Length: 107
Image (cartoon, rainbow, N blue to C red; front, side, top):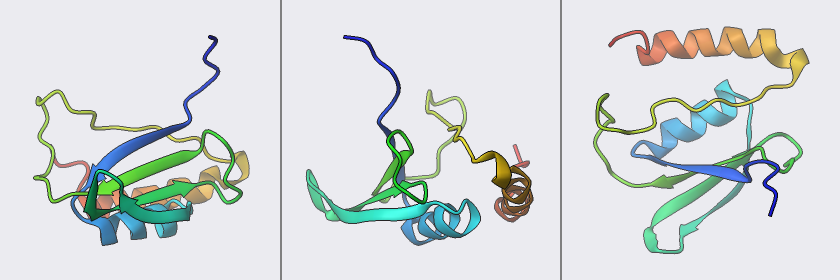
């Protein structure tokens, strides 16, 4: 079997409303599906992708009440996403604003 890419990444969010706002309004991704988690029907499962749902652009989140991640706990703390070249400057401005809002520079 030859792997040609990743289908999607799944993460956890304890603040699903803020998660939705960030990925749709700040990053401009599209909410392509909202369902319940099949293993825990008390939690949502949100699916985001690019505007046309291109394969490999999926990023999904489970809505679970977990504490904020702390560095040094062997957790993944950064995820990289591709952006359409024409949107890079616009995304840079949006992300700089979000970084200040979220206090991402605070260690």
